[in-house]
Structures are given as structure tokens and as C-alpha cells.
Length: 323
Image (cartoon, rainbow, N blue to C red; front, side, top):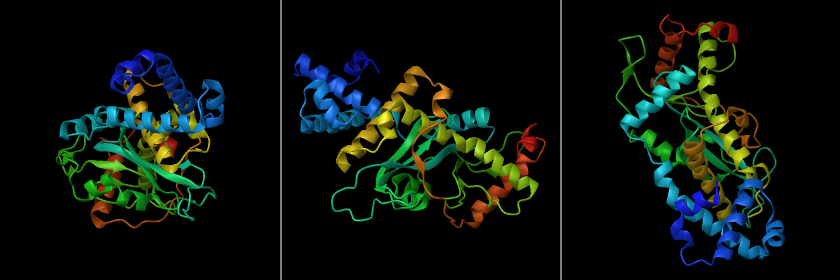
């Protein structure tokens, strides 16, 4: 991001601030987010006290979140859900897909008096970044700060997004027949990995043991869609490289920095577009997959998708070679 674009986007934050101090705020914040340099490095580079640098990071990240959240990460309405699903169909060949969800560990130093709540199965301290993204690699919803010891399914169940989906309050479109068919009418779904529970609006892969050809094809098609969120996390971490290293900030400041990075990710995506090569590697770690039982309605929907992907209307020419 350029200096001018920041001033244009957040003019209120710099009102009445001396020009030299304004430069220090800009360069210290984006030097930290972009490189992950320590507060000691910022202290020597910009002649700022460590506590002052920490305050700058916290207050500016909160201002960025407040300024951009509604504009770049607002909850989609019915027509926008349809547009998201159309892009998933065009790019991933997964119809009626409204988004992809996943969770990642953000490595941190041990929070004060936190016990083992933030200690995850990979043997380090972290909190969870849970996200739902669209086919353009933009985050449509995030939940930041859950204990690193929690599973994806637990984070999802306690998140605002999970509650809205459970209560059918996301304003999803009415059930629609899959492309090339007239029936049955299928719900719009979100795609996830095996750590999440199967549901009418949430698809997960079949267990990998003893799968039929049709179920292996379904898992392949679901994976094609699910990789979108992995790429989104890769773009995020490679653009804002403080996510490649443990975050040595207070817990509240670390959470604010991650939230700011996510909305800046969407802001830059909308302005600059996307370079696919930048998304292939990242240092954000997935949760350990856990077996979670699904519901009968979800199993019926998944079977319908499985049959469709093997039908003349839904099959891809290369899918049998890819599994």
C-alpha cells in the first residue's frame, strides 16, 4: 500500500498529527505488518520507544479495522451469495457453493496467566484465525482469537458465522437445481474439510477408507473448491509477513493486527488483483483433523452432489484421471 492511499483511506486518524510523527506511524506500522520486525528493530529504525511502537500498532490496527470492515467484509445478501456461487462454478466447477471455511493457527508468545488454553497440538502457543472466503480469495467473514487448543468444529460452532448458519439467518438464496438439471432443488452450501460436521449447508469429504469411484470423485471436486481458502491464507501470509513469525505482542494487540491484516488483504485484493504464485506457500498451520459426525440432511445433500458429479451434466473430462 502506498503512503497516499493510506492517507486517503484513513484521513480521520491522522487529523492534527504532526507530519514527522505521521510518517513514523505509517512506516512503523507497515514495516511491522509487512516484515514482522521486532519492536526493538522499530525502536532503532524510527527512534520510537518500544511501548510507543506497541501503542501505534494497536491503535492504528483498530482504526483500520473500524474504517474498512463494513466496506470490504460486509455480510453478503441474497444476490451477492448467488454471484459468489457463480464464480465458484466458473473457477472450481462446484455449483451452489457459497464459500469455503477453514481455521489456521496464529503463533504467539504465551499470554499471561493463560495456562494451557492457547497451547495447541503442534506444541506451541497460538490463537485461531477462522475464515470464510469466496472464489476471489477474499475473506467474507473472520473470527479471530479463539484458544489454540480448540478444534475447528468448536471454533465454528461458537462463532457468529456458525450460529447464523445454524439458525438459517445468512440470507442464502432459495434452493436451486444444479446446472443442466431441473430437479431436485439443492441448497447453497459451504465447503470444509473433515474437521467440520456435515450439514445441509455444509459439505465435507467422505472418509478416505474404502471409497467407491463416485465418492472419490466427490472428494476430488470438493478439494478443488476447498483449496481456495488455502490460497487465501497463503496470499495473506505472504503479503503481511508478520504472520510468518511468532507475534511478540500483547494478546489483544496481536488479535487487532491479524484483523487489520485481513481487511487490508481484501482492500488490496479489490485494488490490485491477485498473483497466483504468491499463494502457494505460507506458515499458517491447520488444525488437526478430527472426526465429527454429520446430520442425515447433510448426508442426503452430499449424495445428490456425488451423483451429479458422475452425471453427464456435472462430470469433468479429466476428473477420473485426477483421482
